[in-house]
Amino acid sequence: MNDIVQRVRHLLATRLKLAKTVDEITDDTPLFDPAGLGLDSIDALELVLGLEKEFGRRGRRSRSRGSGARLHQDHRRVRPVPGKGLAG
Image (cartoon, rainbow, N blue to C red; front, side):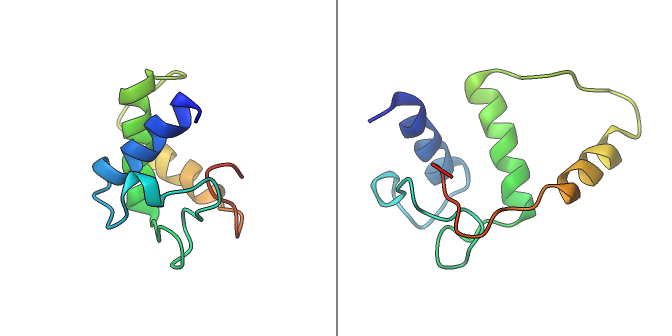
């Protein structure tokens, strides 16, 4: 199994405190579907923070007062694709 995929599965199971174990999260497990992991927007943000911590920060961040609002606006533009899991 790919080491990166295993690390992401571990991060999902532990950082988000999911009811599923690492072994129960497959490549086809939907992230945002209630039949899958059932993640919500707060979970998505927590996942991004965990990925940055685990793999290193990517990109540039603004420390200005409006950066949180911009992050929220950017997040609202991203829509999960139904039926897409980790391998999606």
